[in-house]
Length: 509
Picture (tube, rainbow, N blue to C red):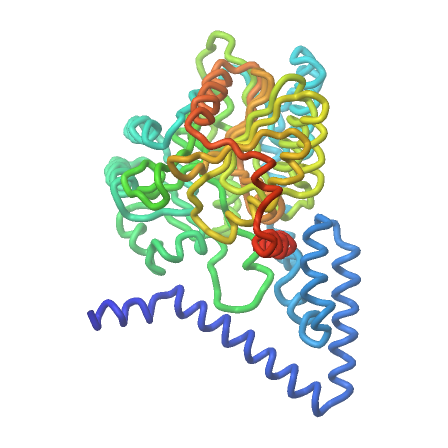
């Protein structure tokens, strides 16, 4: 018992939390003391808060993000400005920017020959404009000759992932937000070790904050001892800094540049319902087989070189052209980075909403949407498009769940249908529009996913698996509880107030 208590007290997360809390308290005490005894310091703090407020107002951030920060800075002018300058915004160091610019140039150069530009016109203007956007502003080409297979549950994808890993001949690349030992990860790790022993190059990236409670701090060394190259993205340091804002939320599994998996699932047992945490875990995965996987490979290599400080020749990893397949639609993997001031994930979603004529189906674990997305969804519903949004009924984070519900009323008033998945937790991030367009990926409908994290997704046009995604969402809606506007109009006023307060600060959560 004592040993377990010591382990918990000395756990990295506890040490980090105490360190950050100590810094905040020390900063508060220091500011208070200096303000009382040095009027010059007090007015310097006021000036810093004015500067912070001007920076907030002049930034390109979302209006709700600006309001949330102003509500912290303006009522506490002595402390608020300093705090914002330490941890607010999304400004990276010049050194980081230079590194990312160099890697971005290599990213674009490696995919340049795959860009189609005007060859996209056969798609029709609606689809071509979306595909062109992703090519021009995310440097992510659209591909044909790629088969896409949709898995409605992580449980179903798991065997396919293991089978694909066992087929690897050249390399295996993995990039995940959360990894936790258990049935899922232990099974994958056994295959990775076996393949590494056979001479297959195995690389692993995990997000350090995402794995803070699931992996030991020295996990990189443990993987190296098993023959697996490993890097932790953005090592979390117990220091008040802007670097805490940007996390690697992508989920990529790439085999030989020919087969790739992405979607909502991380590498932990709840994602395949081997461990029950919040009822039944409803997630999704998409598998690509063909030319489009090269784009996913370049995404991984770019992040790997950023983590390692390397400058590789990406072309060395490019596979031979895939065999010509029967027509299987357009497939466009895309990535979103918080460092380029281009909200790719948000724009993909907004474009899809704007192109809808019949229906929009959405699954999301969190419905913490910005003004533009809220307006687009409401306008679509008002114009006669059926808009259905599927969220969890059993939350993983109670306060986030309340923020999600705080966003229901204006959507319901506009005619949007909202359903909560009664058996458990929905973690899938899917859009389907008019049986013609779909996207499956890692981008949640919240501020962190849309504006602060590294994300990825697959945009689909006229691909056969779009029908599978639609059928899956419809089947899930049938198991879900519809939310009525009448119920939301008769809530306890204190609960409404609580939710509205949470909603104000939602962009900072």
